[in-house]
Image (cartoon, rainbow, N blue to C red; front, side, top):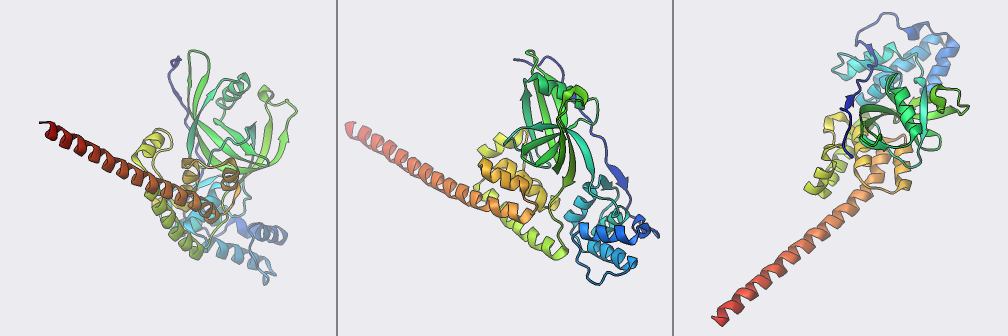
Length: 330
């Protein structure tokens, strides 16, 4: 069926902005000793020498200063902030200090529980919506921030933002969505009292575990190796298939975490492996899990190239034999 309406492009709301500036008195400095201790523990900071308030503040600042660029961006993102004007890791550290007192963002989302329907942060896919239940859900979320939660496995999910929607002549919806942050599900309200009678989940945003600068450099090398493996098995045909929606892999400067999500979406893997890729909190573990898949594809591609070359040789021989046969008849 053809498309009955023009495509609706949904503009996303912006995250709260934080500037990379030196601040003489941080919100962190006003926390009481008990709150600082809880924050230190929540950030998995080991500080046996932390006895006074200032010890905890110093430990938290030191922790932030040691994080990689990707981990600092994640720290901001999971707390609902984005640094405007950040050009260096030091800028990101200054921004992170200003919101270090905040816990990871918790929010309520309309929830779609669709087992084994995988979407990863920063990747896109399309859906054809036929079910009235999901049509009413879309109508509801588009009146707000165009976001809902998708849960492909128990306890975890991803924030989905609707980018475009078109209504077909048959009344079905074509939507294009992008994955944002993953989340842990704290509670699901199935009472049906929410708008449209939809299930509503209270969730906490999550990202991959933070890395220090040394770990970040090691991950950068792993990312280079994995990218090399990917391009060794890639083909023009595969690139054409993914061009319209998934696109080319993100450039190296975008970091290993984003590439690991993109690669998880680009490769056809089993649901069992997909659940591992989606649930792990370690970028290195995600890349390690994908490497055997890439080696297998490289082997298959090498075999296919060998078969194609052999077929070309056989074809050439047959054509040569026909030419020889024709000359003999003359």
